Image (cartoon, rainbow, N blue to C red; front, side, top):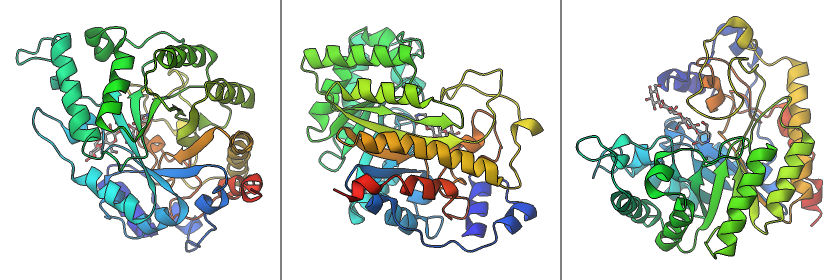
Length: 385
Ligand code: G3I
């Protein structure tokens, strides 16, 4: 597995360090840990996100390993507009189809990600043949066709869709996306209604990062209340959960969980990871993928492996979050990790390319880390029910 994950990293341009020191330090074979999905069975689903190499079974063993640990799966990229429909009339469903088949064969809930996002949507969607912005009716028609082609294709097979991703900024103001500019202020209701039409059985979610920030939290609550007042179909709120060793505070995290739970909707952590690396001081903390900084040695301190004290700090952080999630199991319906192992998580390349991060519960060889044990130790109340 070690060799395989390292060569995977190379072929996928993940730029993961697989040097001799790292390999030696991690030389023990992977063991078979107890399963997350069973430990949290009485509380919520536990999911993973998969990229193309895993979904297409190019890394032997990962699909079976993931099915043994998780009971939900999200396509990390394969269902995004730019991947499915990069140019007009050109559709690529192979990877998304394979993911849905895999999930069904292994009794895993499929989470669709994502129908409407300002990012990873090709320019052609918003432009006419002259490269000028299309009018509202044209964009509505394209969106409706996308919903039919994608959400309609998997209708009845998707547990829930991240319908709208990242529409609100950290300060609570609206993101000035082409969707909002062209469709108008009420576009949020429209996209949820269209998604419901295309797949009436799927749960429909609003999904965003930094959802613990009070400004964003209050704006999301106001937006959702407005949708609920008007009878627009929305069933859940996804807090992405790209966290760090010192953020968010438990107070901010629980205040946000409770504010979303009070809306009577399902609340999910949809993209969880806890980075151990320093955040470049020149960038705002978040998951806005346009952020980038140059690599420097002091920004990449754990290329030779994760020191015990940092592994323990990460375990403590994961445990604190899971304790609060388990305590809110009446409305928390899922926790999904944004990847399977440290090797494939996006944080190795964000916001600095080519670092060696260790954000997940399983290391580069799929061995459980202290964070795994710490999370499992919080599952007691789930088993009692
Ligand atoms: O597959 C190509 C590869 O062939 C090529 O050699 C390489 C060169 O850069 O690029 C590879 O594609 C990259 C892909 O990740 C797979 O690693 C894309 O450039 C890169 O843009 C893409 O980033 C993804 C990002 O969304 C943008 O879509 C990340 O994997 C994915 O984890 C991330 O996920 C987002 C969620 O959808 C929304 N919330 C935030 C989260 C993190 O940004």
